[in-house]
Image (cartoon, rainbow, N blue to C red):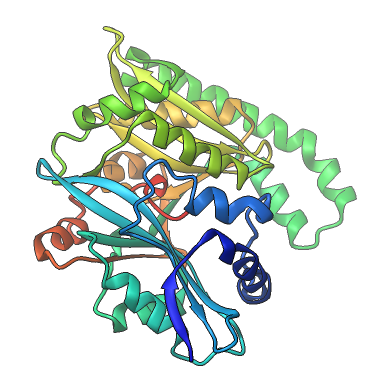
Length: 356
């Protein structure tokens, strides 16, 4: 007889085998150090909550044929603390019945959380989620992109699509000159802009944990952090991105007060992924310009990230473009006001709040 029960450490070998056979075959990327990933991601979390477990689906012989991961979070809704769960790594064996994933996610839906989220879901996962009564947060499913070194990025794009390396190598000096010229022009523009009022330093985790409420004072719904959880999550994120470096930068005003910050994965010569960006009211332009300058100095050719509704105007002014990339952000709550805050863009929902 089939059985759905909470995920236990002794289930890890079976879940690993399922992941290799079911998840990776769908074109997904494996987390680094896969053999220890499920231990780190689901049992080493400092906010581990036995009332918000992950689940396995066992067949009649006791083999794992399905898995639904849950990572606990803490959020604040208009001053009230919420219990939040993030669903991740939903998967079923190719030999399992068609309802295994539905049953697993249904068990997660029935948990005691105030809000359930998922943020990199594919189309199949979205259909299951909506079939169970969940909602797609279209606004937070949008991605933004901004070229940093357009000429260099164009060469990389052409090389990836088959242009001979001898041609792209020959064009590199020209592309470097074009990007340098553009960089100087943008640097002169920045000297006349409000960003000249700001300075940039490394972002301490204590500041990230304690000052976020100040910067998000106007948001109805926001995450809550502490240093231990941030250290765990950022270590997990970095281990899953071994070929890119995680940069944390804080933007300060002329009184040495934080007005915003950004975290992003940098790959010199490639696309930099912004996973968290926040700015105090009136400082969004300066924070975004600081991000552009930092990414350019690090060698990124393009910036990309999840849409942040509070910075759309500033990003548009800096020639970002927006697109739907097929990675859906999903939500479910019994409280319609919480869902409405998300759908209306009155929540802070960065990539850091999602699945890792």
